[in-house]
Image 1 (spheres, each protein chain N blue to C red):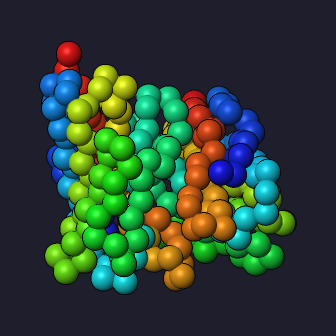
Image 2 (image 1 turned 45 degrees about the horizontal axis):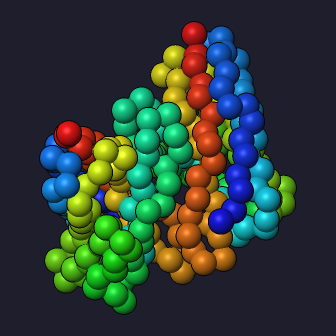
Amino acid sequence: SAVISQKPSRDICQRGTSLTIQCQVDSQVTMMFWYRQQPGQSLTLIATANQGSEATYESGFVIDKFPISRPNLTFSTLTVSNMSPEDSSIYLCSVEDLRDTQYFGPGTRLTVL
Amino acid sequence: GENVEQHPSTLSVQEGDSAVIKCTYSDSASNYFPWYKQELGKRPQLIIDIRSNVGEKKDQRIAVTLNKTAKHFSLHITETQPEDSAVYFCAASKRGGDDKIIFGKGTRLHILP
């Protein structure tokens, strides 16, 4: 299976600031996704990170708040902009391998004060 | 869009007994149904998946069944062990379509000694 790393693993940020989360995969993958998981909750899809084009956002998520980059087939970033305490959550990237199996990164635990 | 319902939200079973978690989906175009296990503080891990051209799949103590007509699928864990305690998520996806995975709300499984 693909080996996925995320940076940072956790962070504590002040409201109004922005944080960029990086996701790196050890092999080229076609599909990359970003999810949010609030404490004790399920995983909510934020967007599909498309290589070479704008990300596809799910209902309730917008590019101005969660800009995403995907410069190549092994790397993506998610920025959480103008943060508020409601953005405190775990953010996970996931990738789909050649067998259509989806794997998750270790997650980034974000706390906004 | 796709909607995945999962029941029960919490399940307690005696060690050695069987556990069953049930899910329904709304989009008849969904054709891939993975199950993920998430232990506390860890990333979701794929434990088994089933595609729409198969009615049942088994892997040791874990089995998944799919009823396409009724849009139901279920996870069965036999001879439960303490290490089976975790949160289990069912999910649905359209492989060959947008490929995004939509998750159920999760089932917290407790294995009682």
